[in-house]
Image (cartoon, rainbow, N blue to C red):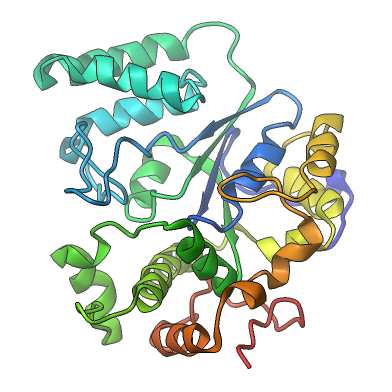
Length: 328
């Protein structure tokens, strides 16, 4: 991206009051969403679809859907419509404890009562005064129901990608799990078999399995980006080059107004941090994988990602020294 006059910057199509930020886990979604959430008159809702999933169990929440749900029609998950009505109405609590408490209370009701009640509650709350003019919702689980979201909510869509070596190494370091992605026949039939790819078997290493999860998810998002050239695709490493300039460009393109709060957040978060925190030394991010991955892991990742069209990118950027991801 290059810096442009906001008055002449093309705006991403969609409803001006709704922005949807998509990406793979550990690709910078939280950092970018938090920054954009400091734009004037903007509230951010983080991962409303991340509900009580357990990677050691069935992976299905008590709402009836787990991570990476596949939804094409309302009747497949009526409670999901209420969840997103509330999210874009700016009425979902952002604190995980409050959100889980609300979910548990709703789950005590019989489904036949709960689902219509949630829909009516969402509609009533949407009509209340005091709603933020802009609501940004970020999701790392919407890969398989994006078209359903678009048909109901018409948001402006931003997709963030990250060097797959950085993403994969972060997944390994933090124990991020791909749940049951390779166990679902529909996913294998729609996304793996057309590419001639087999799901990892029981002998696959953690590195190989993680690379396969990331390869699949980025391929799915890449297909959406190809079908929707009007979406804004940004690259984490490019944003890190000069966050104050690059994220201001993102604001301009999705119709958000830059604020001192964004600048303050980006400045204050640019310091050492670890784990799931968005606090990081920005200049160190593009090449973090070099300190995390061994030569053997790099070979394993390369072997897996070679099967996928964009080799773990959503859309491979032009080669740049800090983003090339050369293993050797």
